[in-house]
Length: 221
Image 1 (cartoon, rainbow, N blue to C red):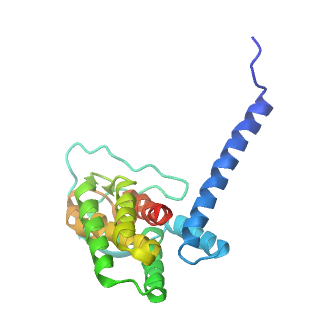
Image 2 (tube, helix red, strand yellow):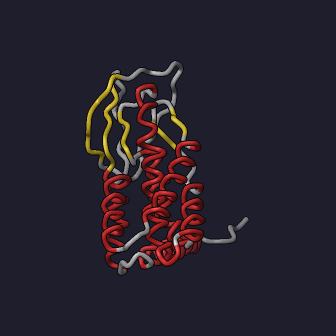
Image 3 (tube, rainbow, N blue to C red):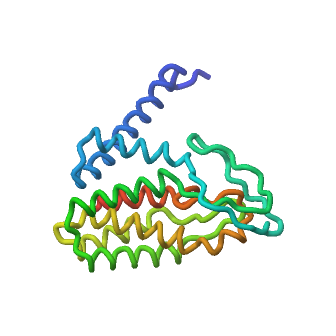
């Protein structure tokens, strides 16, 4: 029986779908950052820096850690994530460039350029942090992981409700810092029981949450 599509046409169709999907995603990302006062070039630079920075962990300190029994979880290497080293009884605590430093610096930029009201900002950070802490989970051998869409939806709803004219920057700053605090900093106490060779603040399982929180929360406001 003859195939309904030749390999050439199938390849063309798959490539077209991927191109359309990528174009839509880039347009949505650009639109999100335009709401924060960035042009297309600056938005693309920030996005690329975040993505490639997710592969860079800057070490802070190490701590003695234990290996949970019957651990089999291994974080597979990804496009921008090298394979993890073998666990040797200590966990290296690091800070991830793309998932921590970039959101922190960009949040500082927004705080400097927008006169965000303190009370709504603190409320947004606190609520997003509490929800992120509640829903994040330590995964043995890997680190901390959390659902991707809960934090951005929470940040967006709060920004719309109490952000007024500053809802876009409030959604980004409150959402990003809330996830960093709730899913990373408050979870540092769990690191020594994970058996993970590296635990990066803003890396591994929480990078997606922080990156998506900033983009989706702003897009929804």
